[in-house]
Image (cartoon, rainbow, N blue to C red; front, side):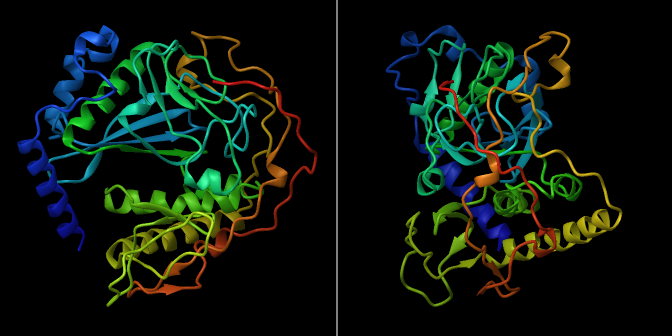
Length: 372
């Protein structure tokens, strides 16, 4: 099943590559209308890395962002049709705290699954170059979350964004720009609070965002176990990953972000691999709870973070938080259905052993107005 999906993706990519002249992206009629920083070639070292890893220059990409580790990963599709890690960039600055963005001005960098189209690429950004995440997405809107201009950009300053150095964003922007020439209309960005390992989940087990993070973990596990980009839909105000019509169904699936989910199943092969990872993670998590690993504070007290690689270069950029804890009154998310081994939908919960009584500060927040 997985091999067939890969073969179809490769055939489609080859057809598109053969039948298309280089596509016009980012709203330009010609490269002369764009600043040089937006059209420059990838560095020779990175081009050499693409060849070594057997990654076509114009193949699709997936970006993965991890707040707590302050790292951004670029994954690129290789000639076998799988996504492999190309390069990890230390993040120079992100703002807010662990947890999703809720409203304009809360300084929170978003968490979730986003799609970037060519029109969201800004070659004329005042932050050198910028990639708009497309926040709020369908999930955010369905949960009444708002905000604007949430980016991955340069200049190492952040007010709700993921800020890189100018040199870093130049590479990331070029990789994103080139990926559109594969014929794909967009690429996926996966933004996480931290790497969703049993150890990190155990440390943050009292955080009110845990239900949201467990939902993100489903998509994370689909990607990590298959090395294929997960298909993302939204219904019943929650994310759904790799859904397909039930067996013998002739109707296409239609997802409405705020309405009840249609009857669907998860691709059985993807579900099997993800469930195996889930069981392994749950055992490790249970052992960590038995060992009573220390619990991380719910509220860091700082405004975001910075990779340690930049702390000496930019002292004082991470300051005391300008907002109060807000996570204690996050909206409740509905239960997450999963699948049996045959791919049928059940009422089984994903990661039941991750559940634990939540303790949190009930204080309300006040949000100053700020914008990336």
